[in-house]
Length: 207
Image (cartoon, rainbow, N blue to C red):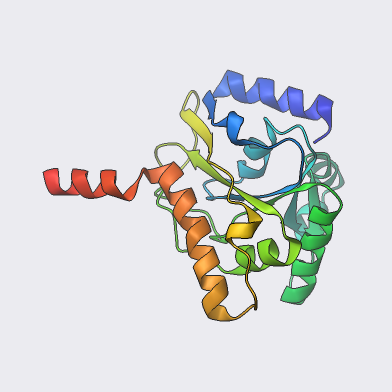
């Protein structure tokens, strides 16, 4: 993200929201990462760039760039246009090229925003990108109550421990292998957002 824009947006978010960032010690500074996050709002790509020192890139639908001012703004935030209807493999190849160039890549595996804060199952695209690029995966969690952010809402951005590429490497891109990698990544994101499975099971028993 452009430094001026990043610090300006950071100030706005600190003013409007009760914004906290946790787990920055888990962010490696020496290599590009697949930043895999849950999806809560249109502001998520901006939120995720806040503490990052390396340039962060994310995909945005081509229509968002039709307004020149807004297109300029999101470009400064690291967005690049993706044409609807383009082949899935082309998108995958573009994502791998971004990582190979040394930039972080934000991915929302769920593919759509969650209105209730629960983390969905996710899609295997994140697994394929991680496998093809050989990049480590940084699980990220965006947490706030309710469907939308409101003035002074508590907003938490949480980073988990990196999943090394060596632990999610696949010998082939079979659906079964990619599903296992996807589940590993989504499990890490879910734990950041909803807490460890053991804690959720215990609270359920108490109720």
